[in-house]
Amino acid sequence: MLHNYNGLLQEISKPIDYSNVKTGTAIWTVVNKVTCRKLFLCINVSFWAMRWLVGFVFHETAFGLLSVFIPLYVIGTLKGSLTDVGIMMALANFAAVPFSFFWGYLSEKTRRYKLYILISFLGISISLYLFSLTDMIGPLLILYALISVFQVAHETPKNVLISENYPRTEWQRNFGVFQLLTGLGWLIGLFLGLVLTICGFGGTFMLVFCCMLNLIAFVVSVFSVKDPDFIFERKLVSIERSVSLVNRGFYLFSRALNGHEIKEKVGENVSALCFGLLAFTLTTSMLFTPLPIFFSNNLQLQQSFVFGAFMLNTSGSLIGYFLSARKTQSDDRATVKKTTLARTIFMLIFLSAVWLAILPLELSILALLVMGVTYGFFLISILSLSMELIPEGKAGLFNLLTGLGGAAGCLLGPYIAENFGFPALFLVSVVGFFLSYAEFRKLHSKENIF
Image (cartoon, rainbow, N blue to C red; front, top):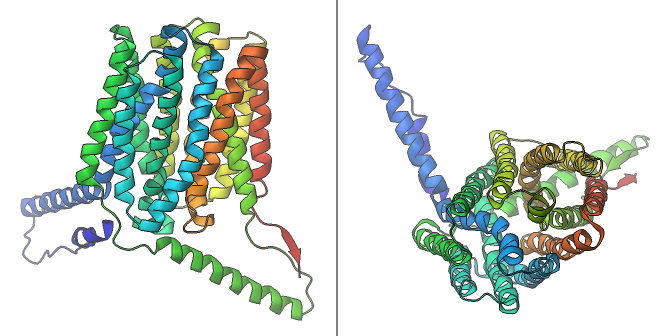
């Protein structure tokens, strides 16, 4: 898709002919014209490169609003319990697990990535409209699960579109740009939730509003998303890694022949990536699923302030996305380890603030902001790393692991909070983040002595 605009890039870098330029004000005029021309071409390249993201921004706006609204709606309007919220979220995530692999397999098999993005947005729109027509917990459980099934349909196609339209050295930056733009959509959704709550709009209006946002995402994506012309970038990465490993093997073998004892790390511990990702997503889901209720009931905040607190968390994520997008290259493995450790530390601060009742609101909000920043760095690095290490045709494995972790976390989080209290939940979260950090530390391969 992006390769069609190489002409624009060449035009931008084309040398300027100054042979007819006179001194004085004429030079200033030419410089201004050249600057304007290059700026205009840069804007065109950026527009064409990122135009397919517009539909995702509308989609994320809807889900940013729903992320806080759904728990508050179930407990406040429908008079449900934390257990109801946990069952709803867990059922949705468990339903999404097989479908994440199913959608990923179909999109990779057919290579029609646009089709599954459109199926996702349209299916969510219809499900949200049906969701707005009932106020009974039972049907809502089924409909929310259906929303989650359609939600995962676009995840693998989105990751493939990014990885196939950019070289490996630019994956981190462009995953960062994607998350930054969609994160802005999420933040706008939280802000709209705050405004609509203050204005007194009810639950039915909120759901129909989110339905319309996803319908807009569908219409925009019909015209803006395009399947890549060629599928080869991930094959190149796999070939590069294989050649690098063979080359390293010959080097070590030659040193061994010369009588050197060699201790070298070889291979990639993909299982560490999988278990670390599973523990991280489980803990994150376990923590954030009942967290709006903690701010609403335990800290006695109004619904509008709850939306505001989560806007800070999302703002932190946007900072992480922005800083990641600015980097051309970095060590994804090191970033994953550092951010997971940082989350563990700030969860300890969160726990201490609540347990000791020392500025619980202020320190909780600070922890939310910093955990948002670390999550931004983590997500970009883990996406790049997963597309590098997970074999082609199995890209749905990433969504499978995050779905399993999210489902288990949705069930455990509300259960622990309702039966043992939020301090216990925060303590378990500290342990969960530390376990994921311990797994990610294994990412550099096993040692082997030749």
